[in-house]
Image (cartoon, rainbow, N blue to C red):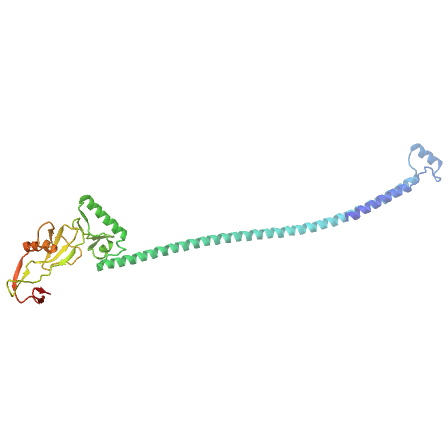
Length: 338
């Protein structure tokens, strides 16, 4: 439209130039009178014909300008209408974009909220799972410990010491403490056993409870360094000895010694009489069945252990018996008995 208006205006201007070019240049006209020409020359005014021609040209110019103005107005109205339509479309586009923007922001906000809620939910789920696992672990450990305590108490009631009630480390620390106390106060005393199996299987103990604490009192045997040896037991078997001077008579050892405990590195013998031998592995010094004898002292037990006939004769007694021989003894021949 703009190009069309400009083309039309150029066409009108070109016509104006053409008309001006076609105007007569001669000032004298035959139709004018003398006085008119005289007056025109004197006043310098145009004559009637040029004025008509100029009026005609101005009328055509006015018509062209009016036409141009009308066309320009139509173009402006069309352009304004098109601009309004375009502006209305742009408003619609902006409204749609604003709606899309709001929708996108809403969707983004909802997505972020959902993601945040999912993270929080996952975090709470992890916390709940961790607490549940921690609770299950503690419960399992507590159930195991309760079961172990129950079994340990049952073992104590049955006369056995449970390793759960008394761990190895605790027992070792207690034995070391006792040994340290002995080394400090009574250096000549020591523990009879250092192996833990003895205390778990054979040691005597007592238990008592105060409030929620269980006390375990164990008998820990101690001995002197002179007796801290493994003694070997020898039974004294009495055999009849035939008397060559008296036929039908025999002699037999008259001592009441039945067992002798001997250790190569010990300075004492342990003598037992009348078959009174302690049954436990640990023997108490206060036991009346035990008699401790000095190895350097001349005794019947020493003579028997050394097989020294002179000491046996000097310290032991004999009795003379008349046949028959005891049923536990068989005479092979002469002075040989089985």
